[in-house]
Image (cartoon, rainbow, N blue to C red; front, side, top):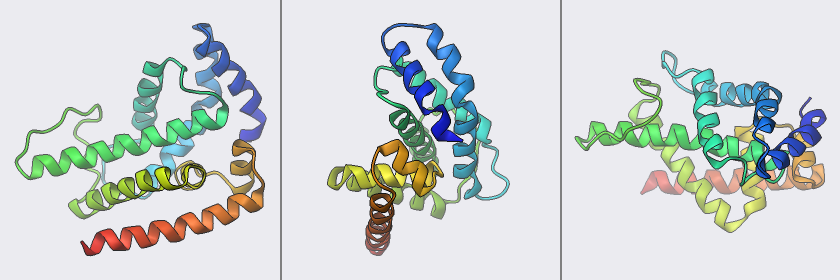
Amino acid sequence: MLPKIVPDVTQLLNEWRTGDNDAIDNLIPLVYGELHKMARRYMRDQQPGHTLQATALVNEVYLKLEKQRGKACESAAHFFGLASVAMRHILVNYARARKASKRGGETQHILIEDAPWASDQQADEVIALDDALHTLAKLDPRKHRVVELRFFGGRSVEETASLLEISPETVARDWRLAKTWLLRELQRSSRL
């Protein structure tokens, strides 16, 4: 499914980056379904009863990516990786804003308003995971990309390998090592 659209997405990203404003109009319908699936995966793990919907998350991601005007996207893999990071950042920013308002601090302006999707404990977990992922990105960018595509993007080993242009065996090994490292890092941070 995804690998079939990769050449078209890459071509449209290149056209958008070089100033073709029509390219974004052709790109959005092509990637919307994939972005919505990614958003549903993110939202699946949230507490029942939250008001944030996958469609709202996709819209927020689109706004974030549109501001970049395609300049940062080099390929389909890069685009979906950026989309995954944007989704994670939207949810982390909401968790941080929610915690700040609970402590009496000024509430930060966020684009998704009135979405009480996370408990305080869940907000702490989201923030701890984000911190661990930032550390992993500095230590091993490829493993970080594998986590983004597999965990947040919901990609299979084969899809991840195709997007990153590495072997499925390398993806499987990186995935195993990254999960082990993240688990240790999260356990360490929970003891602090």
